[in-house]
Length: 276
Image (cartoon, rainbow, N blue to C red; front, side, top):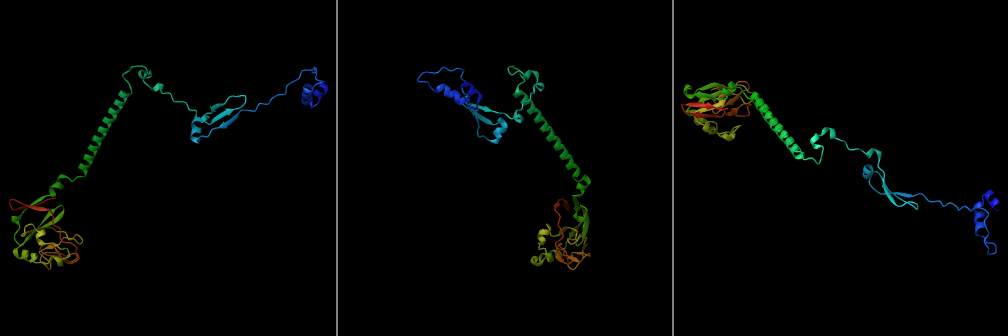
């Protein structure tokens, strides 16, 4: 039977029969060596733990291995592109700071103090340099001394007779200084300002009723009007026919505003100072 069992595919079953079947209650001696069947052990079971993609990129996927022949293990596989080596800056560090156990005076706080001092000094120097540059630019753009001298003029009022108007130059513009008579002052004070195009009281335009100081530039298109002319005995612009009264207020014509009054003040000695 052993020969038949070895020569056929039923040998495992026949060997088992020869082993377990008894002969009258007496064991039968086996004539050949009986081979035990192989026990197939399943491969260890691996289960991947749930974690985020960010954790997988940093540490690799984490798995658990368990089975019959192995103990339960938790292992982690690192990805090749995340296994980055730390850079070594030993070559760039001073020799006295490479040993962490040394008691060198060149420690981190002292090095930071030097860095802060250098940064503060650079900031102060930069601010001072910017201040010098801005100061020079402002000085270049500011008016020159001759222009500043022309921004203030002093006029002697004794040289202007009563009823006449004198012309001066101030900031490149004609300046009219009129010595008014009593009749002109009374006429201008009687004007109903509500009927004017640009309503303005005569007392506001003239600090001293006898003296009228205005800029001789027409408010229409910038022409120079003629003094002691026009329908109201004040100023007349021949360019487009604008008529002003003896207070420099527009009374007729296309001009929209009164003649401009510059800033001025009367000084001692019978003079008027035109300030910028």
